[in-house]
Length: 235
Ligand SMILES: [Zn+2]
Image (cartoon, rainbow, N blue to C red; front, side, top):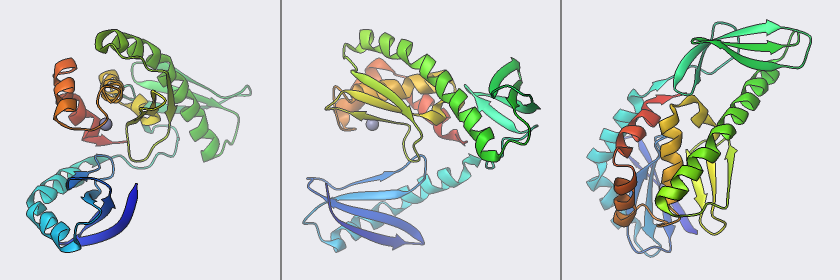
């Protein structure tokens, strides 16, 4: 629950400050958007928060530089010869006109065909690919959940896929339901697996604290490599 919101600007870096019913001050940088956010106990003074932010400025700058250096792919137009990522590999898209309903097919190691009726709009082309992505991602998830339920010993009650701007996944601890970002279909399969494990471990520990990290290190010691790959390229 956010009680109050403020913004601090340090060296042209915008930092959102959220005052909440919490005990400790902490800072996070969103790996997808590069936004800096501080969560502070509700009664803490703005001055204390600012001093804290200044003390972390070098760290913030280091992360922001890393974020700005991330390669950004241009926005997709869903046209022929465009580069499209699928399960961590890139393919060239071919648009093919036909008379039946639209469909998508991987035809060889580096080409994807998108079959559409004549003069399809950008929206229709995008929808055809997105629907295909959703179907492909949904087909991969049950086996991964099944595998990790056995390893970790927790039960997931439900899962879903949706488009998310700021997170790779979320976990609703109450309903024991996990949500996965549709964009994960563009990343290597181990990245999807890492996010599933990340969310499932929240069923053991809700926060990203030392207990949580201990679980992560135990079940997926190589998780940092996966995380790096996940955030290397903005697609
Ligand atoms: Zn988490």
